[in-house]
Image 1: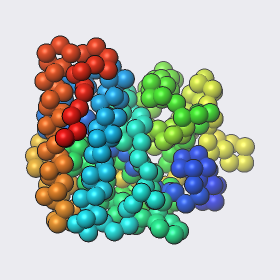
Image 2 (image 1 turned 135 degrees about the vertical axis):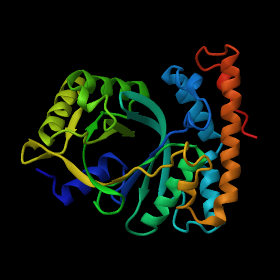
Image 3 (image 1 turned 90 degrees about the vertical axis):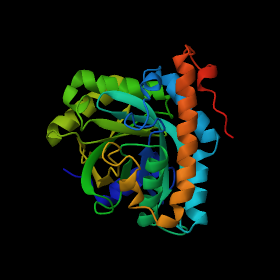
Length: 299
């Protein structure tokens, strides 16, 4: 049984974005795809080290630079600091959790961002950060992105550290590996909300696994409709680029207005330079916690 639209809107307005108007959500990871640069030495670091790398890049203003490049070249006209909010959160896929840049976007009401601009922003982040794919969800419209998608949201009492989100994902895996270790298994953390798209399993199996995970972990399962655990439905997308076939990021660039390509390319070059520097230091044995190996020079 699918949750009614009004219930979906009410729940997400309070739990995901903290505003009654925010209803689109995105996520992109900051560690480059291994097909672009061998990031395995960084990917093998403990989660707290990878999280520190992500936070430093964000503090360097990398995301702000992308938005400025798009706005100043008129590739987007509706993305701004009033309708878009970024933070470092957890992103899980196929049994692994990584730090991610998660964002909420107001796409209705005064000062709303358009769906087209949200898509351009997401493709631009995927290109700059050399990602195989990014994640998009419109909570209110199943047709905004690439396909309709069922999902559930588990509530923590307060925004958890990334390690705790990862532990919840692992709890899901112990209950049902089909919700954890497959190439359709994943989640994204937005504040205190842990959002998981339905894996390639029947509705009943997906619901039962997450209801049990919520019980074991002491978090709240939603949606509950007429007293029964149910599913939300929205529109999802995974815009991406095959870096083996398109090493210049051509699939992303084909969806981004051409006037911003040069500026975005410069930001991407910076990201690859600092990533290469971190990898070089890790190769020299600097790998204990938040040490000098992941210190990033913003200029």
